[in-house]
Length: 277
Image (cartoon, rainbow, N blue to C red):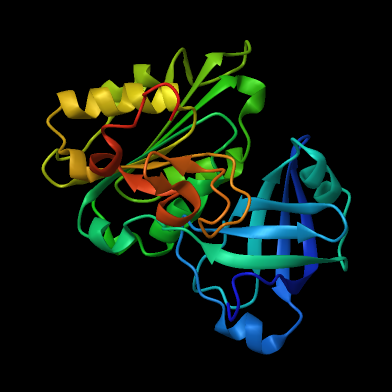
């Protein structure tokens, strides 16, 4: 974007209700030059600005090579997201970005990949899964692991069913509490790890979700002999400005909005899991 401080106008060309609390806004910049020049990496985010209400950081979930639309999947949790949820096709919002660092997809090529996500906060990895599936020949074995608290929290079942059909792709789903007809694992997502298939010397781990879950995953992977530099995490903090000025998302000497939100575990090993950071 020409100026990271200024929001640029985007039109909602489609609104998709994904679940009772989750929706996707499909956007297009009203300025065709801005839209044509916009570039991002999976894992980066935009600041979505609702006029007169405020702005909020939202992950970009569309494919970076899709020139026609820009998708953001949003969970209704606060004042700004409630306002965004009330919008409809044709309405306009402001967009600043993209910000932050994305997933190490270039490095992951020709490697096995394990994607682990917990809870409803899976948007940061949805983009990377879409990216790999559309370029499936570039990657080795792909493991997609999703854990939710309740089986009713599981969304995008159709997408997971589609991913499961891809070659050399393992899709594993767990719910801490499953309903009577829940067909998959009941219990912590870590109960699925023995079914993972990867070469510990040629694997990239990508994860997002509750930090407690991610700590368990990191511990497991290190015990399997996976190198610290092969483990990547998407961290969540209270991001207000997107450019490292306001300090709300400071993480030790780093800023999640500027130096993340995707971090290599090796970079944050001294901070990860420490109370207060």
